[in-house]
Amino acid sequence: MALAFPEKFIWGAATAAHQVEGGNVSSDFWALEHAQPSFFHEPSGDACDQYHRFADDIAILAGLGLKAYRFSIEWARIEPEEGAFSQAAIDHYQRCIDHCRARGVSAVLTFQHFTLPLWQARKGGFTDPAFADRFARYCDHAAQRLSGFDIACTLNELNLPVVYAGILERHAGDARFAARLAAAERALGGSIAGNFFGAPPAALLDQGLKAHAMGRDAIKAHHPHIPVGLTLALQDEQAEPGAEHLRDQRREEFYGPFLDACAKDDFIGVQTYTRVVVRRDGSFGPEPGYPLTVMGYEDRPQALAETCRYVWQRTKTPIIVTENGWSGEDDARRGAFIREALTDLHKAMAEGVDVRGYFYWSLLDNYEWLLGYEPRFGLVGVDRTTQARSIKPSAVMLGGIAQANALSVEP
Ligand code: BGC
Image (cartoon, rainbow, N blue to C red; front, side, top):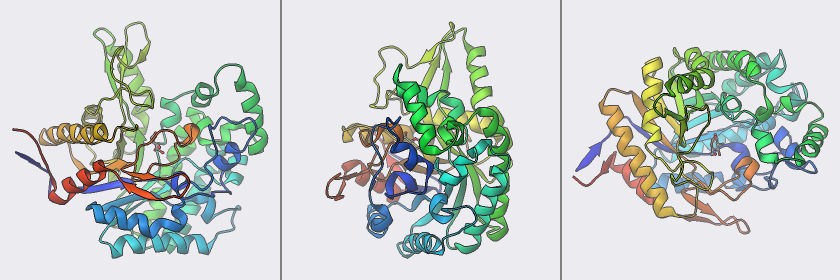
């Protein structure tokens, strides 16, 4: 039996500039990674050297049968100093888009994926009252010069610091927090609130949402027919009996205002990795005994269909799954995770949830931010010494589903 997907369903894989390109030296994350001591397990360094190897990576993606590549353009490269734009960086990203087109792959551009130019972080990042204006100016500059891309995402997971409040504290562990914070602020040359992971929720709701709206309009002014949306970090929030009101409060705080703000957009980018169970005593987390991934997340592929149902019910806005993935060494489990997620997604779509595409995170084993290179999400492995790529069986499997536009399942 085959579960067929709609004719124009988009099958792809995703990456982000800082996690794969290497040498993103003008960004705030680069500075934080090199602080002593650092919140980061290790620096990003050469990452996957995709800045030079993009043609090979796009060829691998196309060869697998995937139809779309979601990648980000890097503000810190395009505008490394305030108001000083690099034409060479624009030319680079145009070449990436052109390579996609030449291989029949749709290019899905994210304009900001966590990193900021260091100068913007020094001005306070999202807390800077001029943040939205500056982001819109960058979007205008890039969108005016780039052509041939098919879909655009403005900001990646704008709500993430709200969902993972205290993200840096959690990774710093106890007594070392103060020393790491002091070193981070020295390296940044300003408050940690200037970095996305340290951004206060109020700033994301104010300047962040304004930046999304102004960035979207700037992109649309040059590309009126291209769908533009915001991507959000969405966990499947489930309540144990009697804790429904607590679950609803969390949804309201983490997702509500962000979803409402983009309910009129062309699409919402859903990015789901796991489920969280909310308990009557107010605690939350994985269900005790449930299998976990190396990220410490519940290994629960069904979470994706649930977040899509929730987003659709609340917004009635078309959805693109811009990220969903599994980290770990067991590639057979990764393949099974993808199949289970897609089986449930298909069911949600049959119920009427309007999902237009699925992007696996990630095309490559890459730099997982604070955790460094240890967690491996990739469909394609990357040798950390030679940069050699190795295609995993899960990649071939997902490519096969994309080519068939259907998932074969046991009847
Ligand atoms: C982010 C990615 C990250 C992935 C896995 C998402 O929150 O957009 O950059 O690598 O999750 O943790």
